[in-house]
Length: 353
Ligand SMILES: NC(=O)c1ccc[n+]([C@@H]2O[C@H](COP(=O)([O-])OP(=O)(O)OC[C@H]3O[C@@H](n4cnc5c(N)ncnc54)[C@H](O)[C@@H]3O)[C@@H](O)[C@H]2O)c1
Image (cartoon, rainbow, N blue to C red):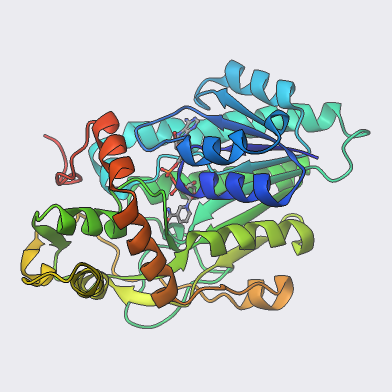
């Protein structure tokens, strides 16, 4: 079995590749352009202690059609799992064109390459799959009630979510038009080790322990449905076994928390773990809201629970505790990736003039 993982140098792709290296005998190709959010240390740590011939890194930008096609032809995958994307809403507000290039054009280039490869090798590859990993943000913003499910109408409201929605539509169109065997998963917010410290949870931990003010956008009442990254990876793997081709599966942790709750929870946990005299909560500052900030996301995970028999292993409290400990123990990694990326936690996403 040969698997092509795109975006494997990122947060979720890295967690997936570590799991595949540890628990399967698949040959794994990791296609990534190596952006500011990428890091290969976690994979290289595992790979160097295992069978080196099972893993290969391909430095390719999906926006480049011919290099993408070469990579697919070279790896001849039985499965493609597509995670590569620009993924930060704030950055999509400042630089939307990058999101169009990577998330829309990149997905189109990958689909075209996959179609050519699949048509050529139909007799050799029995169960070809193109698995597209997407987000619940494509469904838009909920009020205080209601949930997203597989039938929810698309209503993206940021350049990021609009680019992901567009890529979902393209993937689905290749199933209906060309019968390319696809699956789409739309997952809620992930958190866990090795996430680039620009997203809420690692950013808050980093800010607190560096004694810098901790920003909360707007009134902090925006709600996300949180899922530990390894639970997302387990869902992706289980869908390969029990999912139905052409279908969509929504993945969620049933752990809705407001941003304010998350920030205060992390501060309290750090107060206890570090025995701080002053409360980290004193560092909290409410700042100007994100433009077009979605109010609430919530996934109804009944389909994946009933059909795939998946459910998260960790509660939110277990997952966040593990995550905080990991960031406390891996400060050197955080500082190094921030330095390499030329980012030091400053506010972005307020629209550059
Ligand atoms: N993080 C979340 O909470 C979350 C939730 C649901 C879905 N998703 C989706 O999961 C996927 C992975 O998210 P993540 O959090 O790991 O993101 P990430 O930003 O940590 O990693 C994305 C990786 O994709 C690579 N990439 C981007 N554009 C590329 C291109 N044009 N060519 C090749 N590689 C490219 C980057 O270099 C990076 O290594 C994304 O598609 C995202 O939309 C993320």
